[in-house]
Length: 129
Image (cartoon, rainbow, N blue to C red; front, side, top):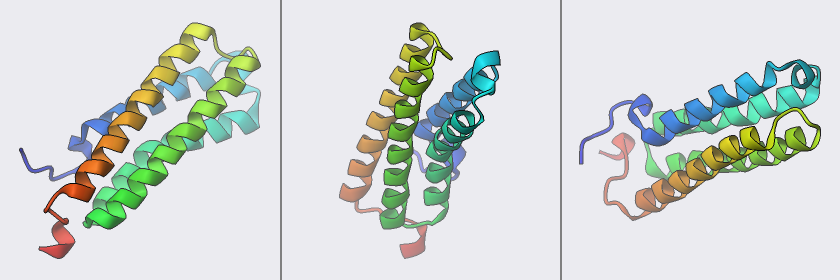
């Protein structure tokens, strides 16, 4: 397995970035953009998915990384809940909801798998070399 040197190399971070971009595009729409509180919340939670992956990676130790991946997973769930609010308010279509929801679920699965891997690996991070 290749050594990952930057969080930008992680597929889960790349997927989270795409999810964040999709959410941002949704929030630019006329009706949606006027719901300032929901826009702020869903942008923050979707951004936290990718940001917590990055922050945890930069901590250089698996225990802290797992903790931040868990935060990321929580933010992913929060964004999914907010997607329901956007759908129920008529800000996004069912097709848009399904696209974003499926992306979020895939990210959650990737995060769960990554956490499990980090808990089992003998590698403990650069901090502990």
